[in-house]
Image (cartoon, rainbow, N blue to C red; front, side):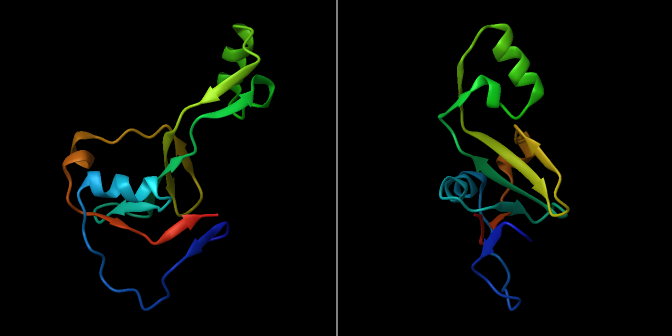
Amino acid sequence: MSGYQSSVGSDQVAPDYLRFEDALKNMRNGWLVTRASWVEKAVCLGEGNLAVPASALWNQHSKALAESFSVKTAVVSQYFIQLNLRGAIQMGWTPTQEDLLAEDWFVMHIKPT
């Protein structure tokens, strides 16, 4: 996977399963996490408290909204990003009740670089 560093090789052992709160702690430390019941999906946290000029916002809807209110600089809050291993990204992912109560989370030992 281009753009990622891994701390494990192909001789990876079975993961230690976690609750969501422990998975979240790992996300706060920069790790990708996933659930055993997911297929080819992972979650990480996007950087937060970034001051971004409104003209440089990457999402066209956010950019248009900021410009319509004459916002010169927007502060981007921290957010979840869900991605699949084929490269599709969902910014602003929200965990479901099932995700929050699940105990099948594990750290992928991959950090975005």
